[in-house]
Structure formats: structure tokens, C-alpha cells
Length: 307
Ligand SMILES: *[C@@H]1O[C@H](CO)[C@@H](O)[C@H](O)[C@H]1NC(C)=O
Ligand SMILES: *[C@@H]1O[C@H](CO)[C@@H](O)[C@H](O)[C@H]1NC(C)=O
Image (cartoon, rainbow, N blue to C red; front, side, top):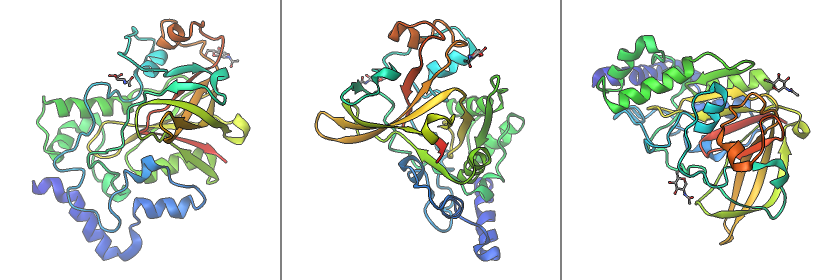
């Protein structure tokens, strides 16, 4: 138990000794990204302001979210790049659509997982995150710190997340697993500089929405986004990568009951290397490499683009 808290307590003593030298994730955002509004997805994952609450998000090791459908990120997406045998997900609603569908009045039944609760999972301040190993070589040490039994479901989840981060890049992919908000910010500013925007899908409930407005993001749609996918992990860890030949849209959505929502959508312009059995091709009845294929991002994804 004491072992588990060690890094947190060390952080607190460092904070006390160093005064204000240790900056909270939120303060780091405000310092580096002065002109970038923080998306709700990030806000929901901030630790309480000030000193880190001992154990929050770490003890009991918090694995948040339902187990099923909790792939590191959207299954179909992963499959398309690895060329694995395709497995049809149960029901993704109108997950895939064509770019021409992005217009006022289009109705879409968005079924991106509604993840508004984070189950106590938060970002750790970078100083703390850096003291906790994140590598398959240190697997047993990680389990120890999180008080997780080897061979448990939780251990398997941790193993999967780390494996996903250690897997080699797709051709042309630039990626980073950010174990803190500060490293996510650093990765994205290293790509785009500090004049940058961050977005997420924001829905209150699953229902049919109508597009009431849309906007192409990223200097007129010329820029490829960095998309960060939250991994299932005891604290907030994101898999971030830049996705080439991709256009990004923000949709303003209106539910049948008047509820407003925001949809972050990416359109992949070059699908010629995708697995021909990809669900998107079956749903849209198009062939690889012919037309851009669009899909909404899950609520726990963050998309970054230059202004
Ligand atoms: C959304 O998708 C999940 C799993 O893919 C499914 O179980 C659920 O019924 C879907 N919900 C709606 C409203 O389509
Ligand atoms: C599309 O992707 C394929 C395979 O990755 C590549 O060979 C081709 O040059 C790309 N096309 C364009 C227009 O970028």
C-alpha cells in the first residue's frame, strides 16, 4: 500500500520544497496554450487543482469504462491499417459516411461511445507520471504499484495498453504515447507550434442528430490532424498520432429534442491501403481508394490542428 503511494508523496514533498516550481497540468495548458480553449474531454480528466490527492486515480487502480468495445481505439480503424482479419462490430450506427453527407440537414444517429464519466481516472502531473514506469519490461513493477494481481483482467488491460504504445509505427505515422497532459501538449506543439486548436465530440446522449452547421478545421482543411485516443489505463494515457491525408470537420448538431452537440469528424482521403473487407466499404458500398471516408470521433478522443 505504502509503495503504491510513494511517487505521489514524493511529488508532494517536491512541491513543498520547490514552491511553485511544479506546475499542474491545467497551469501548463494555460502557460503554453494561452489562446486555445480546453475541450471538455481534457477538463473532465484534470486532477483537482493544487496538490495531487494521494491515490486518486491510482488506488484502487482504476480501470474505468466497460470492458467490451473498449478497444484502444476504434476497432475498424485499427484493423484497416494492420490488415488483420476483419471482425464486424455489433452496431456502430451511422459511424461511417461520405464527405458529401456533411451538409446542413443530414441526419445521423451518432453512436460514438458516450463516455462522460471518467470513473475517477485523471491525468497525473508530469512529475508524477515520469516516476511511474510505462514499459513492458517493467510490467510487474507497474502491477505492483497499482496493486494489481498478475493474470487478472486488469493486468491484461494494462498489458494491452502498453503493447499498443510499443507497437511500431504504421508507414508514415508519427506517434507518441502521452502519459501526461504536458507530454501531449509538447507532442502537439512540436508538430504544429503553439497556435493550435483542440476539439472533441461532445454529446449528452445517444440519439438522432441533424447537422445544423459544419466547419472545416486546420487552415482551410490543408492540415492533417493529430488525433489522441485515450487508452484504458489506471490514469489518463493517450495514444497520439498524426493521420496523413485527413480532413477534419467540426459539426454542430441538434437532437430531435433540441439538445445541441458537437461532433468531431475526420475524413480519410486516401483509403487505397485499407483492408478491402473494412466495414466502411461494406456500409458505404464503395471501393478502396475511391472516395474519402468520414467518421465521427469518440468522445474520449482529442483532435489537434494548427489555427
Ligand atoms: C451503440 O453501439 C453499441 C455497441 O456497439 C450497441 O450495443 C448499442 O445498442 C448502440 N446504441 C444505439 C442507440 O444504436
Ligand atoms: C494513397 O496511398 C497509397 C498507399 O499508401 C499511395 O501509394 C498513394 O500514393 C496515395 N495516393 C495519394 C494521392 O496520395
